[in-house]
Image (cartoon, rainbow, N blue to C red):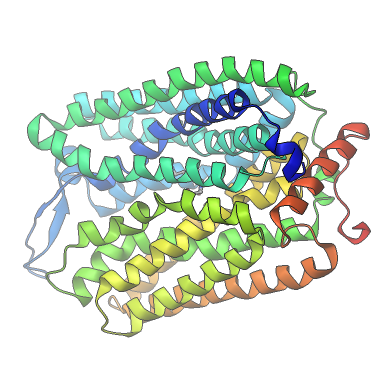
Length: 458
Ligand SMILES: NCCCC[C@H](N)C(=O)NCC(=O)O
């Protein structure tokens, strides 16, 4: 779409897209809110002979469990998603279609949290695991549906990076709000009340999903898309035909999100041990709060394009952040803010590159694959990092070196992507050209579905 033709879009059309975006944001608000409910339980003193200043989560006391069982509340979410989220994307593309898929995943998220809440009411740990497992069956796939909705609603528009950044910023506000609200509700009411409140946020997301489905029917008619319900079956051959750049982007997802998500799980202890007396609760939530202004970065990328250069900048900043946090005595706020800015930049630049490489009919599968790799890497690295810490008597220099290397590899991959794109000219180009290419890609794929872009042909 040229700048000229875009100027002719009536205001009511822009308002309609942004109304849709509001509900696209809201469908995952509940899932991002409830994901870290276990982590938001307050810590209480728990002195032992080995560690007189030791603390323990109130959740462990409530269910009468240890650290390992606490960790399993997260593992039952991540491990199955090494595989499930890929099938979630596949189901969206070929079995359910986007609308029914979103509804099924929303119901699973809400059902999972209701089961978790019942476990809190009856103090049953095994039921809590069942709840987290059911939540995991829908949680990641719902994020795939969200990305696919966002790509579909903003396909070929000049504000697609902005729209993606808004959904991520909004979702991460959900994560951050949980860290403030859950401890407050536990203090002012009770543990079951705080957990049931999470179920209410999922109810809000469920209602938003119903409204979004209605709006999407109208959008489908406006855009005259053939996404009546579902596409032709995705075959392994289609996936093998995904362009090389998309596979490299999946690897960047892995090498960027491991030093972010896995680091955050150990950040509390690492920062407390390196900087005694610092406020670790505030420090560890900084990267998520910093994601809130990522729409500003998305807005900037919409103006200048060159997503890969922003991704390279984000990985370079992530590398520097881990060096500052792990190997210098600089104030930890500096390193954590660097980490947050790098996250906000990556979140705004990486996810919109996928619709420029993969046609709409295969977007669910592509996002599903990206999240499957991400979950596998995060789940395995979390185990490996904790094993290393245990074996080295909590030598955080080693883990910082590992995170630094991961981020540096991510940066190197971005540079390779930039070099590859000099020839292909698909994603490190001015945004107007990228949007034009995306439209051509989708037009070509609807004529000879499922056609995927052949990089060397470009
Ligand atoms: N409950 C966490 C959902 C994560 C969704 C997805 N795997 C993801 O990482 N999205 C990008 C992000 O930055 O959150």
